[in-house]
Structures are given as C-alpha cells and as structure tokens.
Image (cartoon, one colour):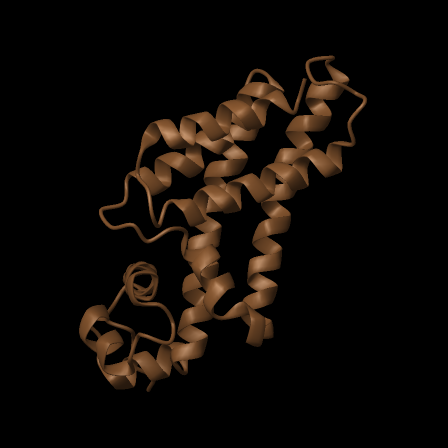
Length: 193
C-alpha cells in the first residue's frame, strides 16, 4: 500500500524557494533542505527525487506565482501605459517588500546556475518570454489605441523594458531606495512617447 504524503507540497516548495533564494543553489546543502522544509530526507527524495529536481520545481513554483500577478495587471489595466507602469511597479514592490536584499530568485538562478544547467536556463528563458509577451501585448494595445507611438518596434520596446526589469531586480541586491526605482520607471515610460 502506498503511503500518503503528510505534508503540503506547495508549502514545501514555498519554503524551498525561500532557502534557495537566500543561500543560492550551490550554497544550500541537503541537510539544510531537510531541516528547513520540515520533512524527512526519505520524503524529500521520494517526492522530489534530488536537490536539483527540487530546485527546478521551486523555480517553476515561483515563476507560476509571479506570472499570475503580471497577467492580472495587464488584463485589468485601463490603458497600456497603466499596464506597463503597473508591471514595473510590481517588480519594485516585490523587491521592496523583502526583508533582505536578495534580488529576484529567477535572476539569481540565471546568474548562478543557468550558464551551465540547460534545465534552469529553459525555465529562465520561458519566464523572460512570458514577461516580454506581457509588455509586448500592452505596447501593441497602446499603439493600436494611439497612446504609444507607432514609429517604434513593439517587440524591441518589450525587450528593452524586460531588460530594465532585470536591471531593477539586480539593483535590488544593493539598494532599497524607492526614489532610485521610481526614477528608472519614469525614464523607462518616456521611451513610449
């Protein structure tokens, strides 16, 4: 008879995100995972196979929760500019709510692991494509409504703003000054004129 799991996988993944985010993939030991997640080593292996698989699942869990927020902003914004500003503010809000200057979990994974791990790289690329698509959708709508200049390539603008997002997320590791991020958002919005 198969044993039932006596823990909530989403709760365990949320805890894994926190630990990997704080210590990095390479800085996190299996014993730290067992201690922090509050499950036995055998349960960890039975459910997640190994540290690498748990890390991949933690990245996907984080990505899925972030993507829902972004799609909600784009869908509910009255104007394209409002959507783009809302997406940029979401990024800064997420990082300003942190107790520690950890930056973005996915950007940290990109810097630490993606260059030598194709599975992590695929998750990062998928996430960046989702963000780029959200900005592209908002920009195209703005161009169709005459709110954003048509003389600029919507895809290039979306990629530029994606790069701004990544820069904000990296900068969050060294500064928490809201004015710093507000200035970046204000200047970024001027490229839409």
